[in-house]
Length: 64
Image (cartoon, rainbow, N blue to C red; front, side, top):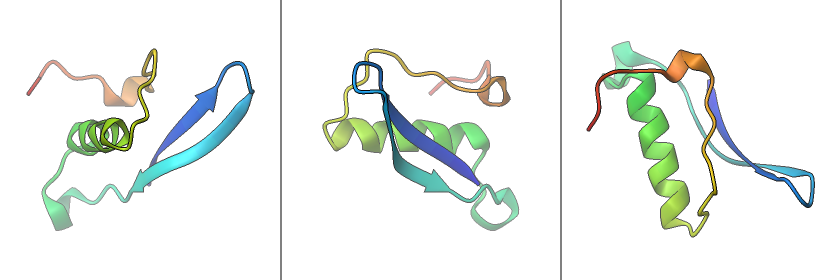
């Protein structure tokens, strides 16, 4: 399972925004596909972060 959370620095509040089950054999999506989709949907929901932080598990040279 992968999660996307919003953390307010000033309010010190953490709110879950989205989650995905990582199952490439079922949906054919990579971990980076899920990550990009979750961030895109968050922005569409008017969550515009100053920065996006991710675990190194999401690093990739492939960009879309």
